[in-house]
Structures are given as C-alpha cells and as structure tokens.
Length: 369
Image 1 (tube, rainbow, N blue to C red):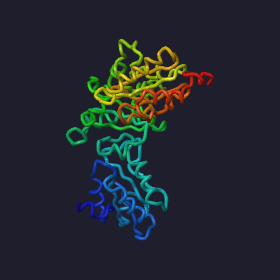
Image 2: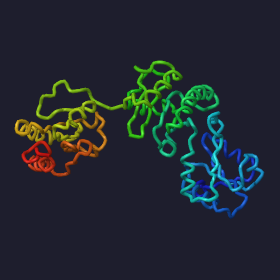
Image 3: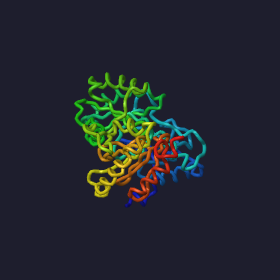
Image 4: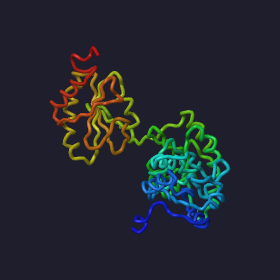
C-alpha cells in the first residue's frame, strides 16, 4: 500500500541511486531533467502514474549523472539490463523529441520495452508481448547466477536468427518451458522430446509450432530452417481437432476442425452448423429435434446440409464465435466466411423460416441467386 501511495516517478539524486535503480531483470526508464519546468517532465510524471507497476520510471536532475550515461539534458532514456545486451542492438534508447504527451511517452515505452530477444514471462505477456508475429523459444530458461551461462548460450543462438529477421517485423523471445507448460501442451508440444520447442504467435491469431517430426536436430540447426519455411508460408498453423468420425452417414454430419472447411465452405451447399458441448443439457435436448429437421430436408433439399461439431474438442474458424451452447450458424453460399448467427428459439418452424430467409441454393425461389 505504501508503494501505491508514493509517486510512481521515483526521485534519483546520485549516480549510485540511478545504478541501484537499474539493478533489475527488466528495463528501467529515467528522465534526466536539470530544468524542473521542462514540458516533458510533467508528461513523464503522468505517464509513470498511468503505467504504475508495468515500468520502473525515475527522474534525476544531476547533470553529471546524465553525462555519465552520455545523455543530453532534458531527455528520457530506456535502459536495458546488462543480461540483455548484445552486439545487435543499443543498450539504451532515447526519446528524441523535445515535447510530447503522456500518451506519446507510453507509446515510446511500449514500442521499445523489449530487447531483440526478450524474456517472456507470465508477468509481462499482457504488457510486453502483444505485437505479432512473435517467435518464442521454450527451454530451461533461468537467469539466476547459477544457470545464467547456459540460458545465455542458447539465447545467443536465437539472437543470431532474430537479427536476420528483425527487418521482417518478427519479434523474438525466450520462455521457460515449465512456466508455460500448458501453452506447449495446448499445441501438442508437451512431450515433443525436443530440448528446445518453438511456437510462433501469428498476427492472424493462429499458432505455428515447430513439429518434432519435421525438425529433430539442435536449436541452431532447427530454428534457421523453421524460420525459412515459416517466412515462405510452408509452416501450417496448429488446429485443435478431434479425429475424423469413422461413420458419418446420418442426416446430421459430424465434422471436426480438420474437415470443417471442406464440408461447411462447400460453395455448392447451404450449411446449418451446430456447435455443441458433450456435457451441455440444452444440446442434448436439442439433438433429436436437430436430427428430425435434417431428416425432413435430406430428400427435399439436396443442397442443404446439416452439421454439428464438438466445440470443446475442435478449434472454431474465425468468424464462427462460440460463447454458449448450442451455438448455431447458417453458412449459405457466398457467406462462408461471414456466417449468419441464429438468435431465435430452437423450434423447428423458427429454424426453417430462418434458413428460408437466408438460403441461396436451397428452398424454392432462391436457386436463381
């Protein structure tokens, strides 16, 4: 509570105080202001309050301290901790403008808050690693004095690759495999057998894992090859999918993530899709009605298809958002990527009218479209 009541902008009076302030495993931000009336100083104070807890922000008025760090008067500088220094990037980054709002400074902080290969942790994922594509290398990451050498050995390998791809807007980070065990498990890398796992978070929201069956060498061999294939579009995104059903001859087809687009995105069919959960009582109650509806139109409307998919075991495509169960979408011809969500009662007559209203190649009067 005391820290929250103190000013977020910490006053630093001497070189030793500044150096002590910088003894963190994270960036530090220091404003060097000999002029207490400088316009930027007020903005820095406001920015520090707005970002309290995310960044350590200090201010020093001693010109000799500024000279020690080769910083001009009335300048704000981001300092990277020594553990992140490399030959590929500066050790500090200065805000070059003479004025700016608190929002301008926050943008500067966030855009420069990670080194070329940063340390991704649970505590900084939401504030530092929100720009994509992001390449994360998972292994036994430990920056304590006892294990730092081993951690830095492999981070140096990643730095070489990161430097080659920085102009392509790829961001890189290392992360501890135990801390993010659930993240690896979710994409099938939980027991990959690799000493170093790689997962790319794409700007499209998809995840691209480095699969052990395709990359079974050491990191310095695997990562360059993986990045080459990734940048040329040859790495497939991970899709959580149940196995394909062995028997799928009923009036309601069961689809999974791997064949969803093949069935639902068929531009010769209008398709009604039910997203369900096996444990959902409403889904169980709706199942016989849905089957009855599909049976009724199986012969009458050959261009109308009824499908269901277990949303707990399969990833849903973009624009098929599932927030409750069951969720029903109609994907007529021409609107496969922009389906129409059904919001009415789950009654057969209501569903039929809904489909007739939006049908393109099914039901009389729509086939000319």
